[in-house]
Image (cartoon, rainbow, N blue to C red; front, side):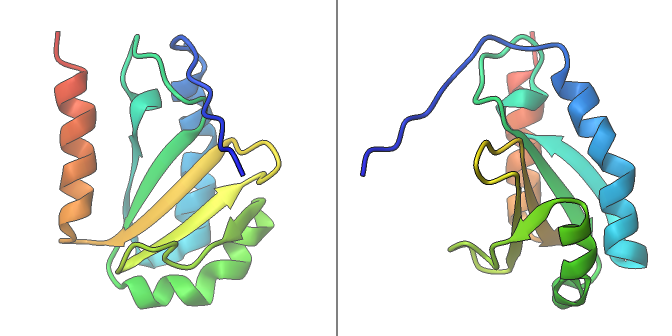
Length: 125
């Protein structure tokens, strides 16, 4: 099976697509949610990217995410477990034509800072 990855020019709607999910994700994860970040190539202004919005919610306790799966599913996300990454909970929205990936990590996980560093470094002029 061949996997095709489509990279497109930067689209100015990507930040709004993130903002459109922000409050709903925060509410779905409840008081466990500390922060929600737009990451990945769509978070970098003017950078060509896969047209999929990547989001990192930071939570107090990763295990409490498992009891909020139904709330995420109500938003149209499908739970994928860790999807091969330890200490992560991963959700995809609209699997046929994926629009959003949500990578939930517990505060202090080094993956959070790694993703933020990519976004922040790539955004430098």
